[in-house]
Image (cartoon, rainbow, N blue to C red):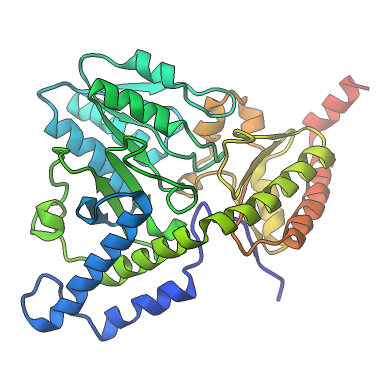
Length: 394
């Protein structure tokens, strides 16, 4: 059996053994509905409270400000749609960026078409950074929400969240951040960064799929998103996913405890891969900010070839990678993120995203880069575009 080198941790991570072990009793032993009043359900209710506290501690938040959802997409939808509804008397203008996850972009498009919202989509620079001053200039008297992702899921760029939060706070505007890629990967303090709402998803930090949360600062007048019950303090109806919530609490605690050591290891392997690729593969480029970057993100573009071909050939070697967001893997269009940072279509199509874990070794990295060099060389040998380029530049 060929060795598996999994480099798609931005899409999902392996649920850790510790998390699975913590979840198991809530499938078969403590299976009571936490909303029931008998003693048997008390264990489930307490487990939810404990997990809420574990997550809140990672953010510097209060446990009452954590609301469990089915994942990051639901949390993004809730934050934006409910804000527009709750603050309609103040205005209907929302500021976001062109490189947000589609959970945000498609929600904003819906609100424009169906609810008459006014959306400003801010540009980013060549590294994917949004300018806080651009945020400031975009504010109008009708602005009710600023939503900027904490770190980009494709190119790994970490945005100036603290500065943007300060602007929003100064202007009395709600500030939401999609932190699906950042929570548990980099330090976040919601008070210090003036964050009013924050979205996250467990399966990005070795937790289970199908569970996330929306942090809502106390005092924010956001309304219920799912109706039908009194769960989550009457803001999100539906019987709680107790095993998932327990798993998320453990994953969050575990991520916080290992963050510093894990980040240092991932950065070392990440920078080794980036250096080798840029120095040993001609006509390659790094996408995203070289410094303000998630510890585990490597996103590169190779000219004259298609990213899908690279992925298939890497897969034949047991290497799992991607060309961008897993949510758009069926699309033939180039990444909207890469286009937003100024890449032409042909270069955007040749992108490769590799996202590491603490289990990724330097040996794994060298194996991938060694074979990637061969793959790129073989694909370019079959490319008429590359042949024409070489002829013109001899």
